[in-house]
Image (cartoon, rainbow, N blue to C red; front, side):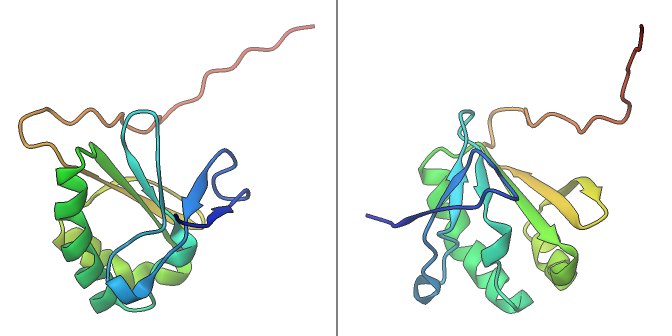
Length: 127
């Protein structure tokens, strides 16, 4: 059983599995109610080649587990990982001043259901 760790600042309601880098897999993640997998950005590897081999080993396993989508939040301090994510067919979803969010849809026979990021906010005010 994995020891659970709460990462409240990045994902307030999420708990992550403990990472084990010896397996060369991305084990530090949370699965949401839509069977989407959110990789813990605090435990991303420090080299592009490590991320590449971790994704090579993890993605087939996640496909067998019927994971629908993968959410990869890359902090600005680790932008060198973008090339590896793009080589695994991750797509840009959105970005903020301190990170880039990338997604990958796994099912081959189901159309991508990851929602697009909002581009506008509507507000109203009154007294």
